[in-house]
Amino acid sequence: MIESTGQHPTGGPDHVTRVCFRLQVAEQHMDAYRERHATVWPAMLRAIAGAGRRNYSLFLDDDGLLIGYYETDSVADADAALASSEVAAAWESHMQDLFDGATGRADQTARILPEVFNLEDQLAAADAPD
Image 1 (tube, rainbow, N blue to C red):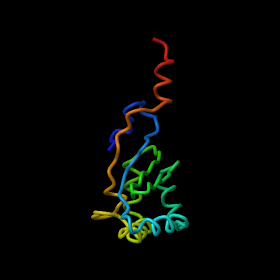
Image 2 (tube, rainbow, N blue to C red; image 1 turned 90 degrees about the vertical axis):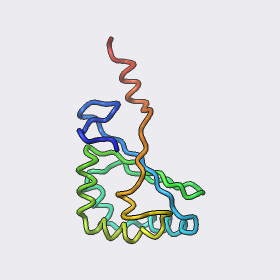
Image 3 (cartoon, rainbow, N blue to C red; image 1 turned 60 degrees about the vertical axis):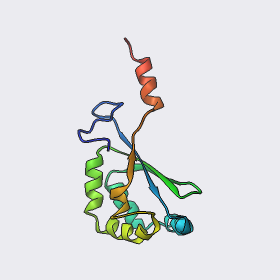
Image 4 (cartoon, one colour; image 1 turned 135 degrees about the vertical axis):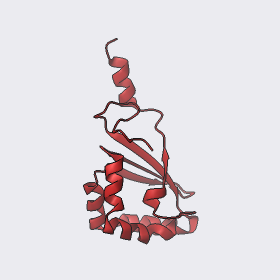
């Protein structure tokens, strides 16, 4: 996972950490997944925001591939806050049966994808004085 020191691989120590992850929603549960996310519990929304995750989006493909993206100042702090949250534990339990091959909380077992390109970072580097 990106971030143990607070540094993003393409940024400096104060650079936001961008996290992209993937999970697999079971094909037979895709409608239920969409329905549950159409009305996420307000307490869960506040827990996510309070943990420091922002600009959070989920994308679901027709084959069940789920891609999530969020930004945070500290992955470790955000993960710890959600790991200790009773509402997050209840939400993850509520969602658990919808994933293929999930063992444990989906928010703690998702596969993190490495970032290989960011337009703003490369533009900043290209425009930096030599």
